[in-house]
Image (cartoon, rainbow, N blue to C red; front, side, top):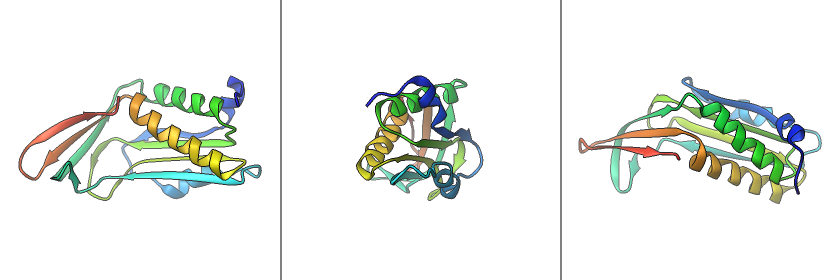
Length: 148
């Protein structure tokens, strides 16, 4: 189902890239809609390992166009699914193990649509939005991982 761009923009209720801790409650609250029968939420957290290596520190950085690119991803999701509301927040800066790195949500008339829209939102965010992760490993090594 395709929606016009005005509708796509209207359903983006929360968008941001922040240096401060993220809130699942804020994201969930942003996508509440009386016409939505299903809401799907994805929370990405900093884990203590990557590819069998212990992670000791992690930092995210973003290109200055990050919010414009994130909005474009969200508009495409809204155009492709019967979304009632979308929200996406990503953290930048230094994060600790267990911190929330990204929280996205989609509400739609039905459960399956909400799951599909939420999955597309996080997958496209990771593939297309200019955010990079710098991991430092306990063994002293480090690596940059590009989100796009």
